[in-house]
Image 1 (cartoon, rainbow, N blue to C red):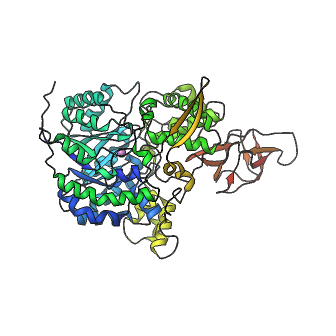
Image 2 (image 1 turned 180 degrees about the vertical axis):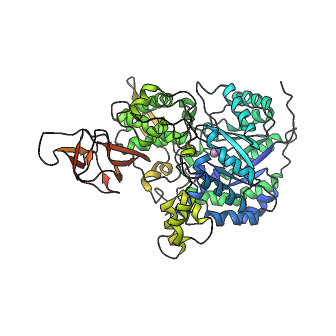
Image 3 (image 1 turned 120 degrees about the vertical axis):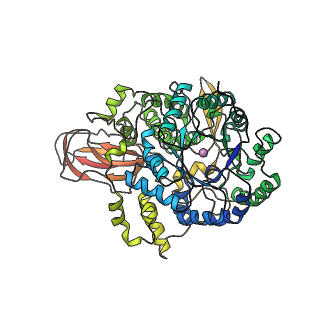
Length: 599
Ligand code: CO
């Protein structure tokens, strides 16, 4: 046993990023943050997490703020505190993998605008997906912190985490974070995990968790006793529930011990006083739901993030299949197993969750396969922890050859193309990165900046739901939902709560649940367009892949529907020729809507 060195623990304050991402859908505005920066700067925090994650998207999409400008204002205000951001590996802050040149440029610009510490994670813990960002951070002399997405399962033994810790040190990271987005790390496991990792690495270890399951402050206590170096906390008005443990509470818990932070409780209280009315404002306008502030034990029961549970609920709701909730919940671990038991964090949580919904609602497993599920089986997200279920993989990818290389090796540099596409809107170098991450949202923002287009969202008090892609956001703001579930003849009232990181990105494409099927069709012989291709479930047309007159083979995609934030191909039921396409991009379709006809 390595001797545990007892020393003051350090704290990363999450109020400017994760705390409001977790509790008020990332809607805190820059002008609500800046007045308190001087006091935050006096505390002596290890760092303040203030950027990245969903803040970039939400600032642009809902607040019509330039995230780069926010970062520069933080840098001006924080004279001595390190600024930290969250970075989704090769996906940066977006929802697809980017070429290395975009990743490198984003890191460079983040550091140039004020970031000191970059916390980089991957949803599969495939370290190859972090290499480019880590090297870029090294090059820019920022601290490269590699975060492991914590999860439970057959594969996730102490040995798994220990091997990852060694590999992270070897790849040149400066520190390690255990990122427990679902609040699954219980105190005893923290003792074992931190102890085992401290045996094999000299890198500082930071622990990030959420209060969702109610365990977090006890877990921190045990982790600190086991030698963890830094814990993530949120100032009390934005702590607990789906956010982090409260800063003041942890500071006082260690007061007078070897782990004493030395932080000034009066100063922390002044900071809390500042945020209290802001909390009240968001409770009043409905963005903060007090029901999310309680303990959600279901996350421990089902070992999935709370936010994933609420996503499943809203997806089933949209399909009129709320009664299938428990069936879907039982299918989640099966799908996860088929997919090599990935951690459940954006985007793997959505891929597993929506595929489980499809499998149950369609009455046949993998009858409908989302594009994202297929890509995952193709290796496009990286290497799975355990091998895929080969039979299912084959069913999903057909004759396509899965890749085994680092996925980004297949993505050609794209910065130049992106520059050209957005040239007319460019006012600063960083704009191309904004555009790269969220093309449509960025253009809308650039137009607003030029004095045209829509301004920031207005939240009416009391808000019933967030505006914008209201459907997608629905449950996040409606909070607890109630279902009467019949299990073995006994009726239970089940509540499913909303929110939490690790589930939905704050604002992916609008997404009322809506898988559609490779629609078999009534196919009497002869006649123009005698074979009807229909949607078997509601959704929105995302792409039309075929045109009238085009020859298609059975299984070719004709229309791609967007459903549950996933792309769901509707395929030709047989070989033939397209006679008509009956829908256009953006059309909402119901189950049974005629999408195309063919012969
Ligand atoms: Co978090």
